[in-house]
Image (tube, rainbow, N blue to C red; front, side, top):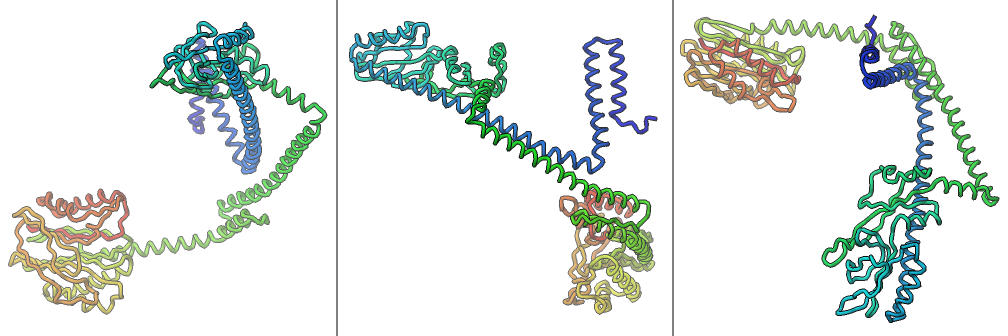
Length: 627
């Protein structure tokens, strides 16, 4: 019953049980938490079901995607339009504010010039009294008259009396400034023996006057940095007035902070006003303007563009649906064809004349369907070839000796692991009771069947030549002479061969381009590399005189290790080669073990180092230990 349930279904069932238990035994708050959690995951499960049922058909996916591609640009265009409109209106308001404040500065400068023209304290006082009378009840005006005394300007008149003129430095300025944490806007001008500070107090009452001449309001905020978009908390009074503001703009201005004097100069800082656009008032004005006779043409043009845009959308939907129908029809035919192929009908043909990629896909499907039987035949041939290669590998293994040999004097363990189905490496050993033991490891260049063929030929030749009791160098020279005619230009064979003379307690080692041999001395406990000179069989410059023989005495417990480069050149995933040092370490540390145990240690070393990387060379080696 529950076999086809998904994890989310089981989780929902569990939530349902827990929610009902909470309703009966827990508080209302806990019940609400589990109830909303269950509703949330139920909605997710519903979306999964709808998606599975709705989007399985390609036609539904194309329709929804086409709707998305049409509606999304429209939404983004509308958003962009309102953002752009908001920015234009805001910039317009900022420009108005800047122009008004700049005009006020110019008027102040003109007034200060009139005061300077009187050139007397009495005249200045008379003019300022008239200005003060006009300012009664507004309390925006701030005036201070200075007279030069001892190279400093000292005040002789100020309005209002609580204005702190002592923080004013002696440098002229114009614009915004702060004294005692109050913001002012004005000018400080010096002419001869007189100086005048003429400023306006900037507060919310002053800023509210702008709403009488424009469609925006300015909120005076005591902030030094541009605020994050937490505007409703900054001016909750706007909601109480029933007004609607959104996307407030920052009206940035610089001011001189006379509360912080640095090097006899006020510090220059920045502040912000919040510019709040009254969109309802703005759009009402636009509607009134549009209702005028002079704007009838503009309104008709806008309606025409909306109609034209809607017509294009409808036409696009019609064309899109027709294209979707062509696409989904071809896909349905391909789906039916695949179902017939899965049932074993390889003669199915899909007919479509769409003339596009879907027709190309249908034609390709027809070709693949007709070629499946051919692929099945080829697969059978491949299986037969693999079986033949397995048979060839079995025969090749029969050509090799057993991987272990125990005599009265020696104990041997060997291995041959091909990189592909058939190996090109070869090992062998020949024992004459009480007289001698010869061991060799050979590596034929190349891989696969051609290398295996040369290996088989070498096997037969060595079996014949070793009966003549030749020295290792002579045997290698004879192999080169006999095999050279059958080699192609790129084929050669490397060999290492060692002949143990039982009576003399020594062995003779020769090498034809092969890897060095490793000899472990039980007496000294050291591993040495034996590297006689010699050139590979089949090379043009091969010469018997260049084959060196090295003689080495041996004792009980000594070990001789012959190997192909497939062992020392094993590579890991990082591209590093195994080398010979880890091999010598294994032999030294396990010298008291049997050759079979040392062989297993070396195989484990090669597997661990390769890290599951497939190496492309055969792995062959012989371990001989003297009893």
